[in-house]
Length: 60
Image (cartoon, rainbow, N blue to C red; front, top):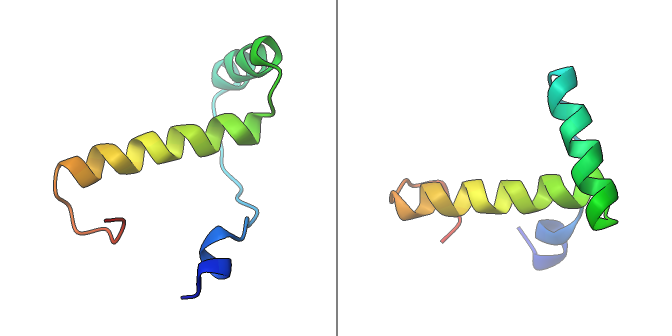
């Protein structure tokens, strides 16, 4: 996979609890960023967590 493909953003649909959406909206508003920015940041942290556990998920 080329580097351009790795950086290409793709749409993702997910189901969350209303409470989570409300909290996410408040954080996004406070930080003046979009929810997408917060999701990407959270995903990066999650992937790093599992990389540290040495799972073979192809992010090293």
